[in-house]
Length: 100
Image (cartoon, rainbow, N blue to C red; front, top):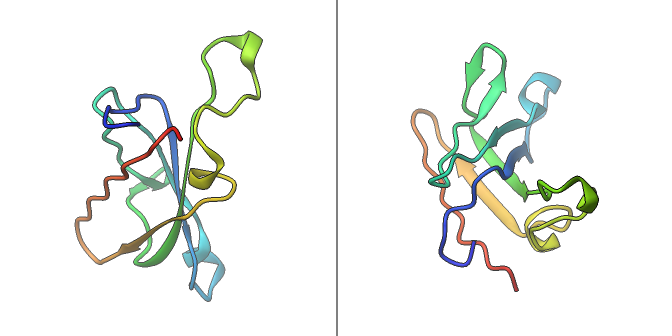
């Protein structure tokens, strides 16, 4: 965020145009210290279904005293403006998040 990798953030890709229940399943990941992530579709498969996705990124504080406080602006999570077009095969998506 703000040009630096964001460790421990939850990344969710939600399919937007899938017609059957199986293809509507979201994929998720947690970012590493370098900001990288690998989406998991389910316990046996990584990646995301091909097509248009809404992308949500969230991070909660490590301090239990701050539980429930979102560290990332709403425009990246519950009011996300992020999207991604997943193609067949390998994909890579980087998101330049700003704290303000």
